[in-house]
Length: 99
Image (cartoon, rainbow, N blue to C red):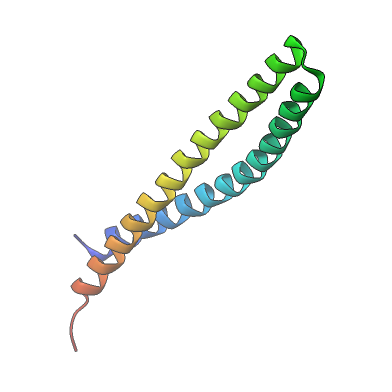
């Protein structure tokens, strides 16, 4: 593979990695908020012992769980992109002319 193609792929991977990491950071913040809200809803449900509070607590927990799964998907995507970037760098280094 030519050096220019490797460079382009490396730049593209780097840009995608920046975007994914930013999205992951936002998702982590949102998840922390949702987990806290779910815990508060769970405690309210325990204290009030009403069916409505129980439903709200379960719903809040489901939302937090769903966002947690989304965060896990983003983490795996970041890890895969880091591996791709490392592979491109290794390939680029191995194809450099020796002096």
